[in-house]
Length: 393
Image 1 (cartoon, rainbow, N blue to C red):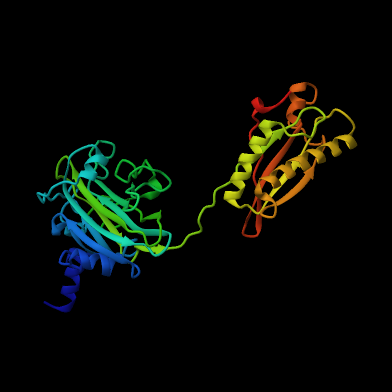
Image 2: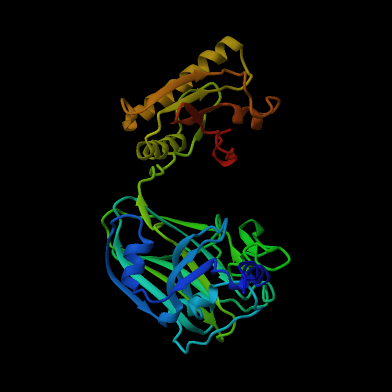
């Protein structure tokens, strides 16, 4: 056969070309976790795997644009079945393995052929993260039909014993499965894989897949955590699904800790008075405790009056009201810890009508607004919603 005839045969039969996706199931769970999944030298112990070793493997892809060029694959069937092209509308493999109780609870049904990879780790910083995608032969025929393979990433704090599933649709608490990410629900996270759209058709067998998703969780440095990465068939062993964990993506790093926010308050005064009522003192006392916990850069104390009396008199009255609030906040432990800016508006900024007593009572107020510095910008919290029950008429 001549050289040109060989080239012609290769062009006619692209299936003879080297596979764009490869899966190697010969690696142990220890190697896949420590040498593939982890990004840095985190302390990891007690690596375990339950399930068929045909369902666990090293995934690699040379398909242009594929979001995960290398990673760890967990499957409800044979991991090698992920290799394309996508010639089957429903590839299945029954491995005769037990299910997983955690996945039973999550799905509300009996699971089978579970692949469960677990390990204990000690984060070096306050956040852990990793990247993954989910793919399934259940797309698109069984969307919203109640046939959902289930998977979860269960993070357990070994000190508090609290568990949480990290495999959720971004911005929600909904678990990732075919009903929650598809062409209709959260389509921005979905990639079809059929001949018509020809996304990764020649590389990957699964009929649909998510885009690459990222998990992120706050943790306590040096505290032991256990993570369970699990996937299983639900009810029966038909139609394979897989989770691919991006290589070197399991990482620990520091993020700024969200500080508690002090809720702004508004206190009210009797007619022509700058004395704080008992209810106003209680609100300011609670506010001061929040401020001490939140440590904002400053508080703006803004005084107002109703429209009775002259402008000059009301300006002075609003100044006295501001001073009463400032003095009280200082007595609650804020002196020297938080800047207190005074601002007197008199009768110039009413929030209700001055034509009746109810409206005037609302205008006799002092607002305490929390000011937080973010980068080079200043954010001042909005005043609270009016609570008319606290107004003294």
